[in-house]
Length: 211
Image (cartoon, rainbow, N blue to C red; front, top):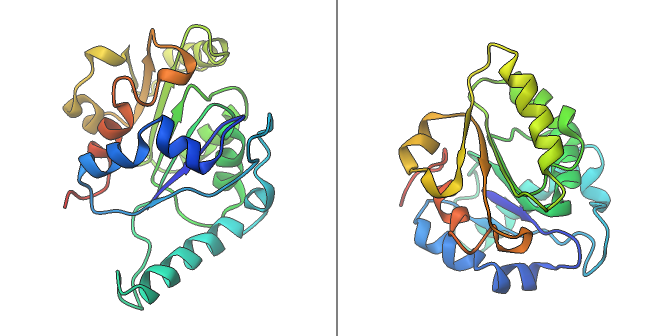
């Protein structure tokens, strides 16, 4: 399952159309379902509502499984399998709190110019399991560069392995073989998802199986 969370001033419909999420998801050809939970609709707000509360994300995953079973897409006893959280901009907050309170295993996190705060929650999740993958794509003027550079400096002074690169120079193999990835891009804040089709590349190289 891939859960996408939109940022400020957006909703699930505009995220799908403006950022080409459904097209990129289909072209990635992974054996997964894309889920877009609605949070603060068309508002300058990062609050994730009930999804920030304990066990709510686990309940959402179970609701999705029940719906898919009712549609005869999966069997009644199917399990969630690998789970990826991905989001843009202000989505960082609900994603961080799902990692903290969701009570559902998450395999990968992808931040599209979204590392504004709650860095400790992402890192607690990352260090809890060496197989977790964390991708942080950041821009010069989206407000995430300073927090990203502080985190990069901390990793440079540790024994942890990480990849820091420009988004245009990256290939799928590098994405597959690195668990901690920092990608700088010259794109504008609202262009980071669709312009280089990075959402497609990230899920192609993820823990999800191809169809």
